[in-house]
Image 1 (cartoon, rainbow, N blue to C red):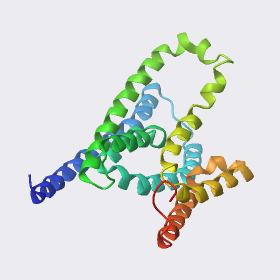
Image 2 (image 1 turned 90 degrees about the vertical axis):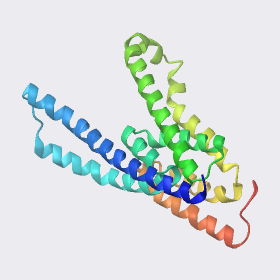
Image 3 (image 1 turned 90 degrees about the horizontal axis):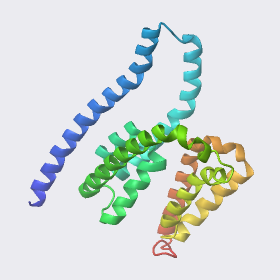
Image 4 (image 1 turned 60 degrees about the vertical axis):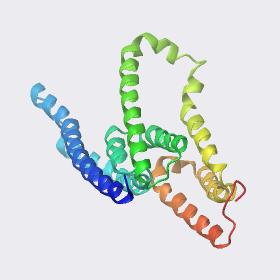
Length: 231
């Protein structure tokens, strides 16, 4: 397959991905919204719609920023097909992005390439299927394992699963360019230590951290100091 045929195939592939992705997202939204509505009609129960709208607006005011930022940041990294799957199934930052990043490193693909589009889609699809199986098993075993999960010995471990996961993943990327990561990392650590209440506003601080990283990277690149593990 020559380059022209490759690009034509990729264009056709993207069209089908967008068509199937939009249909899948529409079905997903209908199912997520329809389930509580149908149960409410069947049980003749209805929420206080005034309180619902008020609560919804308060939550939306917080999460719309996260939704926009995550779309702008992650979609170029993983491509269209993987984005449809990731945003529909959730756990984007905790699970899907680390899975896609690891698959990209193993296969040696580059962000924005057709190969990375396919690798990311396959990895996130596999991750979604595994997540469903694990959750199903977890629900079935929840009651029998409750005494073990609530054990005082294991509670500290469960409380630190996410920090341990992201610490390991972060080091993998931070170590590739220490000069690029040291300033943004130091600034964000100082911000969170000085103002711990901001931990609940991570979505907003993504803009600050991302903007600072881009500006710092641009300055290092301009000075010719970017590159290599010590670069």
